[in-house]
Length: 119
Image 1 (tube, rainbow, N blue to C red):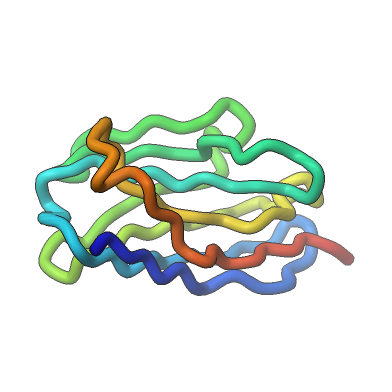
Image 2: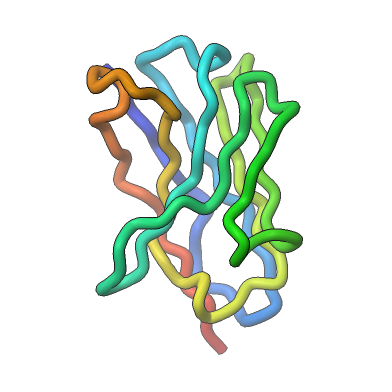
């Protein structure tokens, strides 16, 4: 069964940094692209960043470009999100997820990790 454990969130001041980590299991990690999503209170979940299976390709939402960096460690089945220059509007629960059209793989979410940006 697909499982994700996200961690590394916390409370940080505006302009600060955090590094999120996600441990994935239940599928052949190195075969799939991975994404980070976030969901703020009262808002829809939104895509933040995606990284290809080898880590060579990355894409970012406009609202995090130049501030966030996605990376991965295939041998350890981990994906990371380095977040710099954090803003109050980055406050959300952050989730990692496989990029797949197969329902047997894409139906699962982890518990997420809370990021709060506040002075």
